[in-house]
Length: 245
Image (cartoon, rainbow, N blue to C red):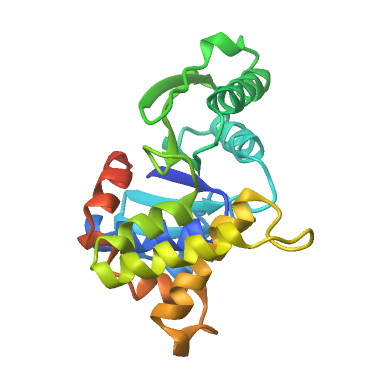
């Protein structure tokens, strides 16, 4: 049995990626697998999906932890049995190119420290699958790794991608999103929306509230599931590399 893991930062990421993979690549959500004796990471917040009996997919929400913590756990598991074939790391597209490079270098340094290699021996590239070799009790494991920025071609976060995709539907929704962004950009406060990440979330939140005011108190998962993400060219471009998972 082999596993492919997608590591993401939060609940919204986990829900959106899962929704897209179900609709486009026919992943089947398996709620019971979290408690299955074969689950290699039973303590983690992972949504499990079946493709076939020998091909299990997991979307791992790391929450307040770092990607390094999750990868360390995977490497420790791999020392005893090679089960993970692919790891995709999904992260925000930082507003500074040097910061993005530094994040990758820190991750490479952390991984190298886990396995006793030099950081330059770890291959990790933006928006590209790379093969890395990790030692285990028997010989070595080869794992494909992807560092995927969201959105691909602009500064922002997952919410930026979501607004770009929704804007494709029609001019009315595009107008709402533009006005939501305008409101947030003109909003001044020393207490609220003081960080870029908070402002992006607010832009999406305001837009969704206008689109569906009666559903404002539903969960983010329900709001995400109500949108046909598989119909947008923005979605296909963003997640095309995940088809290899």
